[in-house]
Image (cartoon, rainbow, N blue to C red; front, side, top):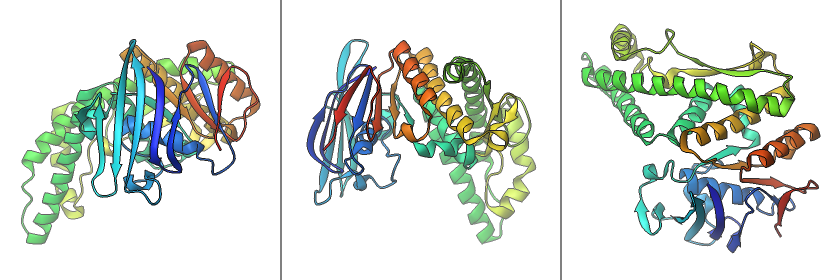
Length: 352
């Protein structure tokens, strides 16, 4: 999977600009405020349907304009496709591929990307929801069914919580059996798929961490259930939901399920959030991102496009060189931003 061309019309600080990245590493250079991150953001938006910088779609539209458009041509198994995202201050975002309309949820997995930004450090230091979001996005990009089940499960949890609030307001017992059954079924599937993904990701991590550290460190990820161990089945979740119903009714929330689980990052068997240095944590996140790209390749047959925003501030020179060597070896198309770039083997696109 490769980007052939990118055109931005009234997106951020671009009026109408086109770019043709190389098949390997392309570096967008320029002064602060030149809009380097805007290009990474546009590619990610075309891939996921959301920005990694803002929750408001209209923020991507150039100031003073009512609409903006992202046109992204990409090749997949030798065939070129065009993704179009039309952004409107009144109507939000509309998507199409080859002029056929797509719903936002159908966009997932159409054009796959892996993103690294300085904010990705929250995968280790941040709240569990950041790590769950990372894992869900990874699996969703290779499994349409997983994404559908995740949406269905999330709706069921929301409906159960709403029913608990309504029952509390009325002073009645909550009628949530239907939601418990939907949650239990969805939870069993999601956790099974997550556990499988973590197992396969660990297989990929062995190679990516070794490439960045020359084999000096061993990184692994462990899936942590909020309650229990192993990979629970549907009946286990039904029993747990029944056991906590009274407490959930009092607090108006659902306390059991994959929306409460977490990921633990371990370096040489120790929790990296507690015992890893800043440099080790940065390297671990990058190794995770490379492992994510390798996981996607193994599941789909093609690498995603790797998006690296301001990575120069996150890695020392030795590990940057190790990263570039890895990208060249596996021929992963990569878009990277940097104030300036003095390395070799990259296409440089300077922004005014």
